Length: 458
Image (cartoon, rainbow, N blue to C red):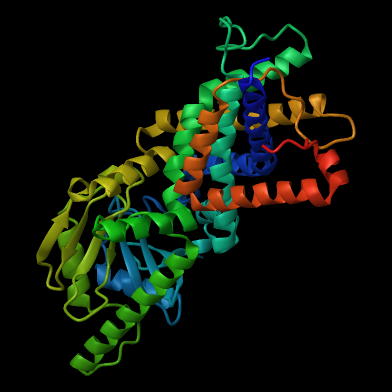
């Protein structure tokens, strides 16, 4: 036996344990994220069905109400609210969607474009797809939930990489069991092939979905923002969510600014504003100008929040590379337009990544490819549990016994260390796992045996 073999064996056991730990942590989260993510993929179709009753409601030759009248009706439907966003209708016959708010709380109101009747209203954060979004990214638990999801996502990267390394065909293996599973060779080989082949086909797509979702994560997203601030690459408004807590603060700040502006206008004109809507002339002029920009729908128009500040017009298209924005003065004068192509390359890269992540970049084909990856992740989770259950050591929780030692495991160990530096939540949880294992081996020998940990250093 050569001198190198024992060391190679130890590195291999380390890789195997990390794969097992990653699986223990990730399986419940991967199942959860796959289900909620799969549902969110079809947000356009789901919302089209949910809000179909509010499309094409205008009938006959009756004139359409002015934007200021529509905004006033929406604000009156939620006492004490002010206009936050006016959504340009895609079709003049559709109900107008208006977002009004009180502090950080927003309500979406559907107003009939001819009669001004309120057809429907809902708290923005209680709408189905907003709930699914927060379930997916934060487990409805705010920053703590985001931290859990982020940690699980980082460990899933390790699980995929270590799994690919442990499985990678060696010794001239054929296509069977590599590109397609052997289905009639008994249950043991069946589940092994299902797990391995599925992992091969979906790993690249799964890694992309995880990486493109990290900018939303609380810790990694803040890490990215700090790096961009230090390097001077942060330019303009961030076009992706920084978490529900940050969004709440942003809404509250904007609401305070809008109320201050309306109070200033009311005092200037010496009148009392019964309905908390912007000055009619300004809203009508801005909407009229915004309609000429031909931005991708839906387009949101937001009032000014400070004296001299412009009104904001932003496309909120699902396909983010189509999102353009503009600033318009209160008299309807166009101040400037920012196209997606004008943004910093990091913002554009994140925009494309998010669009693909949400299945919006290439329409139905994008949705179906993402869905296939998510179904593959579910199959990976199920098959991993079956494999572990069938091969688990009697009376122990630990990973099944390793097979043959593999060389070059140190390279994967080095890669994991680099990931620990690049992803803070993973780095901290990995350090905690190493300390826990080391202390358990010394202080709790029975637990060590139950976990299946050997006394090796690695």
